[in-house]
Length: 347
Image (tube, rainbow, N blue to C red; front, top):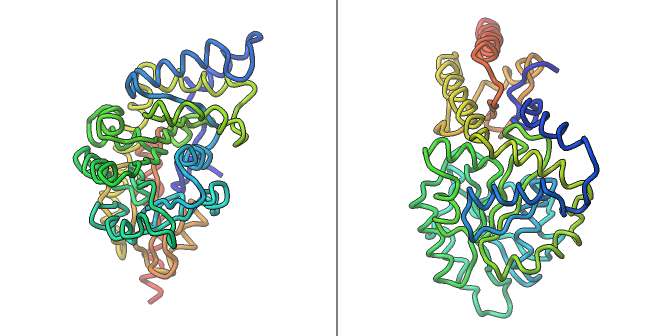
């Protein structure tokens, strides 16, 4: 396939993480997480997210979101989230199917949710005819690549808690948000009032694996049963845990994210000079969202695959990764310029 700008999911595993998996493969260990690798991974997660963090390793981001939310949901509850959220658009209705809870979505221009947008749903509280709002769910960074500041997260957390709700964060690319804000992982999660976190690594150099981090001892007390019933308790947990050890040691998570973000800024600068291209979201992490002439999209996809964000509007998403190079960008931009020039001359 070669280099694509479709997704940071497409990249090879980072060599240090691959080596960590190999090192974990040398001898027998007790299964189902009762091993030194898992204990060390959990220790490192508490180091980064605080002593009150209760981490649980799972395999996929969808599982992390759905099982994390299920820790506080009953079937009559509802989750308030932006319409662009991953739990709404890209998880095949898993939240509603697994928990029985309702998803209440809010249209946004930049993927970010505010207290004023969530407030109208609170009129349903205490009314037996309506699903009861229980959680506000946000993504950091959003599916449009935009980033919540710590102050914005705190504002949502205070609003949620004042109204008896939890705040959930989908942090599949949390490292990229922390890199953009020049802050720690704890600053924009535990210290900002987040109650439930999905912390991802797959999009930033890991082979597989995410972590559900609960900041409530009460919610965490029964989560091991939820994880098992949710089919996410790995037998050979050490292979998942070893990745987190390598990922969290020596700031690899941050180095990877900083590089991906830098490459996105370079890609955006060069894309902005393309004839007929229009960037329509601020480039804050490792995603570049732009509009292209409809006729240019398919020919360019055939050269270097990427995803169409909105077919009707001609909006596409170009993603960079920890291993993207400036040479990759220059070659891709040259391909895009040639396609756009050909279309222009055809008119």
